[in-house]
Length: 401
Image 1 (spheres, rainbow, N blue to C red):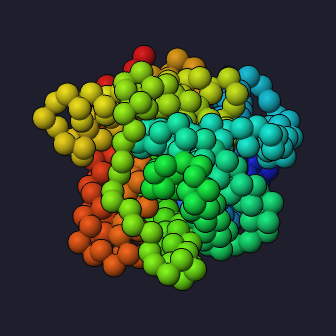
Image 2 (image 1 turned 180 degrees about the vertical axis):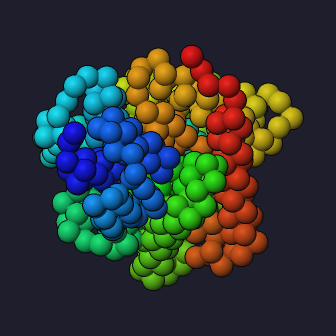
């Protein structure tokens, strides 16, 4: 029999690796229990929150604080596979610990790959939200400049300051581009540029935890996502305010403008695939799942377009149907590809996250248009509720085989 302390430490370390890299609460608990159970540890107790793990046994007790960080979904995939390997073949605790340590030391994606994902993601999502080809090109360049800041100077800042500065830099570059005649619709350009800052992981996992009745964890993660949304909005606001001081007046925008070329169905579908697959790079998804992640996002966006354009359903109704499809297709991919559904649902739900609502509510607030600001904010809240309900419905459908 393996040493009880070593077993529970292994389980606790595996749980920590999962939690700090974007796994859901139930998956962390399930993995820890699977590892402990395989080595014969029966009297363990695991209590997992969004930022902490409590582990106790007959001769072991450990409490760890785990700050909420960005996602490295490749590590989630690897730890999930390690737990299954432990269950099906003989592996000593020492061997398992060494394998886990290799996973924890796994390097980041190359910088060039992250920058390529940023550029393609910004361009793709700019097209999704109505931008024309010049707007997409401007968003790609502005997004690259913003993400270079996030990768290097921003990495040494607090999350709050980095997101404020990121929103400020991205918006300022877009304003500059518009003055230079590079890009047409400023709103679409800014929305595409700030999309990499949107907290897709805490937002999606917070919704999933709430759907799993983990209300404390879900509330904490949603609060973290809300804080990031606020920081982005503050950065965008500062850019517009600074420009108004320099130019002597606020830039006048008049709501979402949809380019007729990029609004056609085939381009929307391609943009959704490219944007989702590109952002899977930023979430650390293993390369072999890039295409599957893009297809999940594309499937959800197809449903959203069909519902919002060709049925009496509103935008909120289309979001609900699309979120349901994304969550269910993610479960199918998880079964077929032997991979946690988290990988696909976090990426696939991204086109539905109300990032445009964050921008427009921010702009209307800064420009003293309270009514439209409340309207945009309320629409974003309704879209969020629709995503929650869609995920809940999909999770209660029969498990795909």
